[in-house]
Length: 269
Ligand SMILES: C[S@@+](CC[C@H](N)C(=O)[O-])C[C@H]1O[C@@H](n2cnc3c(N)ncnc32)[C@H](O)[C@@H]1O
Figure 1: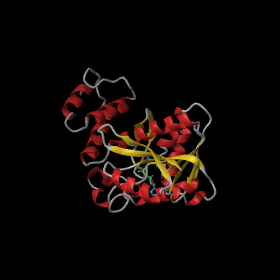
Figure 2: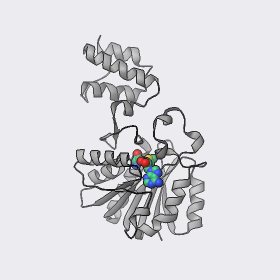
Figure 3: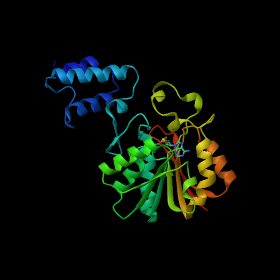
Figure 4: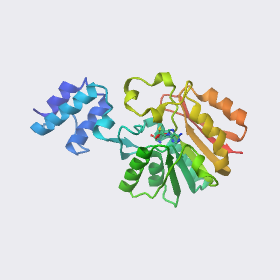
């Protein structure tokens, strides 16, 4: 069977981006074009693609099937013990890099680092010297962060910690975090494949965001920055919490590609 015939037959099964990623991955070739290809599929490759298709039809995200995801132009190893890096988080990384460069910041913490995608993307994108620490409560997540940071030869300190508790007297110029923020009732469909630990944050999805906001100022240097990702419906709740705490100035809200507010940049007062 030719690749283009397999693609034609299975176009309706896959999301377009997934189909492209899959074909590139199977052929180990970034330049494989889906339909123009007259390549023949070996029996091994055909069986491999069909096996992947079966898992995909059952609802398993392609990133878990292939064990990798592209984030900020880099390929990260992932497995079912970590969240699959998302597009909207790239906006948080972009903003963080901008703030680091503009303010010449050095000492950075990626809180709730998962597979290390935020910390590593920042480190790879900034040419000047930068100290980055990644922390997570999950040992499996930290093991993947280590693996990814080894692949990219980025030296990142990794700390096992329940939010900020392990940091005691340490302070940072900037803390960036994509913490769990999904409402318990919304963990369904493909999210069921991802670890609850990486997603769930109580009835309103605010438990961890609230805790980070109430503690991060202790771990920030004067005029340090806190950058948080949040759910699309969290802006007014967070604005209220930030106002109640009274220790941060809101620098800006970050919008995603669909115009939803998905993050906030705060400066410690
Ligand atoms: C939404 S995922 C973010 C992963 C990654 N930073 C990203 O952007 O794709 C949240 C991460 O927080 C971790 N986590 C959950 N509860 C935590 C806690 N109490 N303290 C530290 N990390 C926690 C999870 O293990 C998970 O890796």
